[in-house]
Amino acid sequence: CPKRNIRALVSRQLLTSSTTHTSNKTNTLLILTGKGSVRAGIFSRHHLLTTGLEAATALPLVLEAKRRGLAVILFDPNCLGERNGVDVMEASFDHFFARDGGDGGESEGESESDPARYGNLYVLAHSMGGAQLVRYL
Image (cartoon, rainbow, N blue to C red; front, side, top):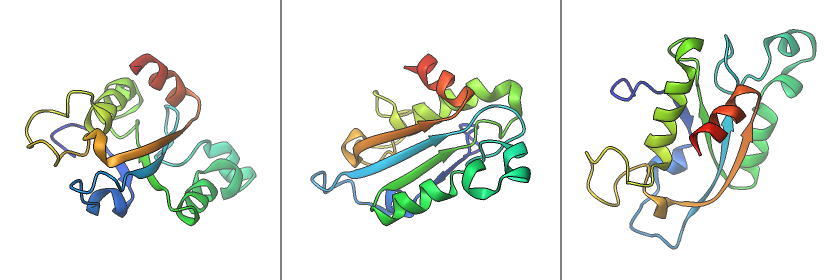
């Protein structure tokens, strides 16, 4: 989303779910990585090289979430470089979970930040991603 300076990997079921059926809320797993040179879904480059995909990435968690029918959102806090990670995370949180309904550019019920579209929210925050989440809250 160039306008908001965010990058996130989002499940299709969140992008295509109808917000008119508020009784069908989508349970969602939100995965946040740390700052540095890692990208969305990668927790550690060092562990990726030495241990493998299972220990260093969110891949097993994403597969399990899919098996359980959860939607998945992976933020990429480093899409504009590690110095801008906090700003990118705040813009990402605002875009998807804003209490005021987002930036006001969309009509009510059509925004990704519409609280009616989300059921339970499960969060996995690694390293600086956790600190940025706590700072945002």
